[in-house]
Length: 602
Image 1 (spheres, rainbow, N blue to C red):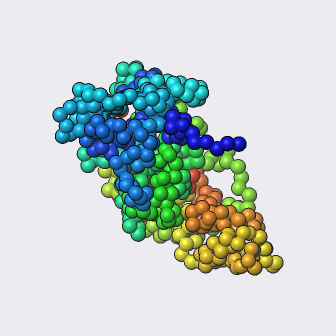
Image 2: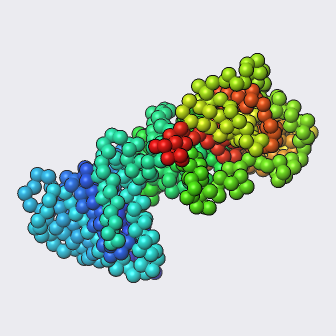
Image 3: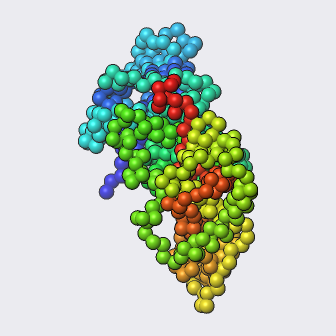
């Protein structure tokens, strides 16, 4: 077989297959070029979902005629010189324009800021036409027509015009969030216009433009730093969640990324507060030394690799959990809005259905329908509740000495005024009312008390009569041995057993009989990927959550006023009490203004 060099046109088409997957990919590359050129206004026009026309206009620094000739050649760029260790721009590969030109009809018209006239160059299916003078304003206009006309096979894999247009809109939204000082305008063939005016340094205002005003009302600010890695942004309240992960945005040094480390850390941070199948809303920005992150992983530049992934993951999980513990207990405005809609006479059955106790996804366990819990008697549950929430007993005793009617609504969760259906506590606050799910709320209190006890001292371990030997690769054994001391505090005793095995001598007493070998292998895999060993702690937390669920105040129990107020005061003092262990809200707040609107008083 004879080896030969491929022609330049075919090389560009191969590169285009990696860089330009669809019209949205081309839009992303062109917008990145405009931002790198210092543009403060970027306009994007599309037709046919970007397949027929994609035009990106900017007011950036522009290019001279000589620079236009270089711009459409592969690996010609103004953004790096001779090193990939210090990349501070969005683009750097010098492949986007020649790749687009090899599979489409591409034209560039530009005029530099200090130039008197503009110039234009065009490429059609890889064939370059000479530069010619052209009338142009300051900046650059890049026009892409008939994308993939030179590679018809690729067109067969394109989705509908609507789907491709939606993908371009998503690219514009991500870029708009990352660069609030830039004005973005997107227009399409349906004559609709998506516009994001510049918000300057007000990042939250730009996020609200993209995600809606509700996010601004339900966001918690994030600002944390660890070893010169800084995390900033905004995270939504746990009860402000969505049915998919499309409302999660991550940026590394201003670059939009879709990185599994970041999404995994986000999921871990919300693991105890967001229901299964629901996704938190968050916008996170990581600022890190460019030498500590590799953005040259894939031609699309959406994947990154951190030199110390454990540090970054730990920073994200720790900062989010701290912020949620500090500010995450307030009720989301969406709960009140849904309640208002449900009460209105004109509300449709679909609007009212979520607030039906039988149909609500947020309903607590019903003693009539909940499956019996094996292994916990009623007496054991009562003893466990008394052990796990000692502070609740103290609060209850203190309240019993007072006149329950004298309780004032000055507290954040107010004063209890009634109990509905032996499950919902109605409390009056200074500016509205709060409805509390007593079972969900107490479940969280018991869980937090038990988890605090677990973390306060080493956990009891049960020795194995015969140590279990787990064969593992030597590198996995090394990783596990490094974390042996941490495992011992959690009741898992391990030690090296030759070069390629681990001996398990003790397991956590709380977990009873268990698959020790499976647990050790899972921990080894987790450490290899994240350099953390959270799996065992997560198992113990899950067990604590299960026990708390069966050891808390059940639905259907009538509470005295002092008991209800004691529960409210304990919720105010417990981090994370705004959601139960399954992520459902424990209370809904309704402001007086919302109530007045129901009666037409405002």
